[in-house]
Length: 196
Image 1: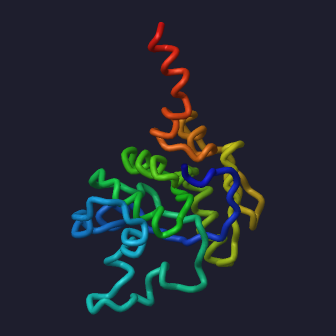
Image 2: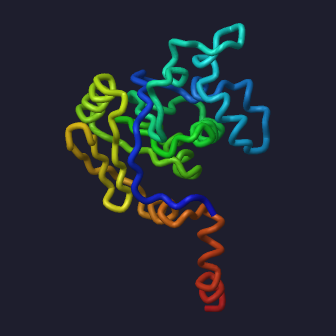
């Protein structure tokens, strides 16, 4: 059972780049790992942007900038495009992000995030632009993500937007259940159905 998801209030890490694909999220050379080691994948999130060729931290990349932190990644449009590697969602979760906000997600990546207890929140282009502007103006800007009411709020200006989520996935996130946990929790119902 995973940590239950309810309401998250956090500062954000801004990544105002469009068309960030899964190879940029976790480079292909890290896909040889067959077990999910969250620390390993989290340490290599955006590996080729976070580190210089000599292995030192790239001081110009946002994850290495100490003024930005939090459990919410705010990303540009078309996040998670490219190959369907689940490792990209592992890396995002392993780094510690619980929410990714963007105006568009690649479908497979969006589902991979949900399966790994990361909430992808789709907002309008205008809301996303305002959020980037708020974070740029004040890196301590907080965002409230209210899963029960499906609302995301920029607390610097009070503006909110409703977001959509599959009802089954919402139930699983709010109850800390993966697909197997859900089946086990409904075992008696399944057994009753099989008897009929």
